[in-house]
Length: 299
Image (cartoon, rainbow, N blue to C red; front, side):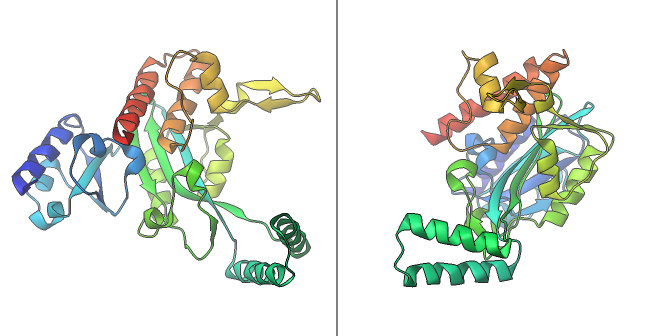
C-alpha cells in the first residue's frame, strides 16, 4: 500500500468520527492499514498518544504514517451520564524480593526431585510461610459511553520482571503488548478526565478501580442487581457471561475464549441499563458489531 492509499484509508476510517470536535488518536504498529483491523479494538497495540485535529493528522509528517500506523479515535468528553469500565489483568509479584524468593523455591523444588503436584504443594507452603500473595495488575483498560461507543482503550505498562502470569489464554495479553504501553499514572490521568461528573459502571467494579489505584465518588456495580443463591443459601453475583446466555440466548456467544475488556465494559453497561429500566438497544448493537469484527479478523 503506497502513501496515498494509506492516507485515503485513514480518511475513510475517520469519517465515522467526523462529528467529534476533539479527538485523541492512539497509534500502534500493525502490518497494514486495513479498515477492519483499524476497528478491531482488541488488537490495538498502544504506542503513544497524539492530540491533533483530523486535518493536522492527515497532513502530518509522512514518516508517522509510513510505519503502517492504525488510528483509533476517542472523544475528549463522552456523552451521557454513564461510563462503562472494565480491565484485563496479569498476575504479578508485589516486589522484586518476592520474585527472587519464588525463584529460589523453584530451584529447591527441582533439587528435591519433586513431581509437578509436589512442586505446587511445596511452593504453596513456602508462599504461605512467607505470607506472599500475588496481585492483579491491569494490563488493558476500556471505557465506553452510555451508548456503548468506545471512548478510551489502552494497554498498561507492567514490568515484565514482576509478571508471574500474563493469563494470555483469557486476557489476550503478552509481554510485547505491555512493554511499550503507557504507565499507570498516565492512564489514571486520562480516566480521571473522562469520568468527571459521570457514573462509572462495571462488574465487580471496585476490584477494577482498586487495581487501577483510582477512586471515584459515583460507582455502580452491575452485579448487585443480578444475584443467585448458592447451596448454603447465600447470595452470590452472576457473571456477565451467564447473564448474556440467560437474557440473549439467540445472540452471538461471548467470552467463549479470550476476553475483551471493551466487550465486558459494554456488557456491564447493558445489564445496568436493563436493570434500571433504561433503553439498551444501542449498547447491544455495539456489542454485536464488535463481535462480528473480531470474528471477521480472526478468519
